[in-house]
Length: 312
Ligand code: ARG
Image (cartoon, rainbow, N blue to C red):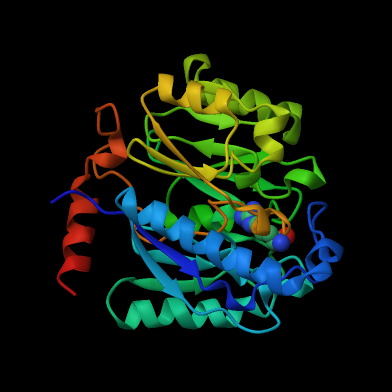
């Protein structure tokens, strides 16, 4: 059985841009014509869901809630690996109400047998989920962003809970406030990243751990278009409408790129990756699977997890 990525998305019925917690957010633009923007957001979310499904993923759409517009970005809800969930502690008061609702969703998935353990970061230790903690299937470690929304102290919690290495990357730009806005790990081991978002030490860490041949630098245009904030599984990459040059660079490496118009969500500072949360990531049992596209080939544990999920 081919391994099917399972992604959570949140229904955008309650989405709006009503406050500013990052420099991309434009409540003025939204409120100039909220009905039109909401319609556009609904079709953008549906288009993303369709692109993901078409590329071979399963999408689990869960409800949002009034007054919590940024729930449409479930990447920030938790870090998930090996059926274990570490639920976020939001740095911004505006998003804190999401914690209880996402906890409820994860507990329901746990009761249903899809997830094993659901725990939350300790109170006072801010961490904004998979947006700041990105699994690297090739290298079998997390890359963790800190310095904007997530606290450095969260890294030790992540490491202890999942029992895997966590590599710290300091984020230095308020425009790239989550790691996923400026850092994308691809299944073949390449890393697309936007250097100005990182401290000198962070850039050096990325270069030394990734290896020169695996580094792809994102341009200003790629980063400002939220194209680095992409979903990848196997050879499929789904992202906000990309510049032609970026598509070509990724195609050269053997990937297939699908662009989706996500403009209504970019008005809130989010793109494709933020709008999803991968629920069935698993570490390899005995190291990396040496094929061109490792995550397309199920590891033993992934197969076991996928089979358990299918048997539900
Ligand atoms: N308005 C949201 C915020 O500032 C956008 C979150 C985007 N998510 C992400 N993982 N980058 O929190």
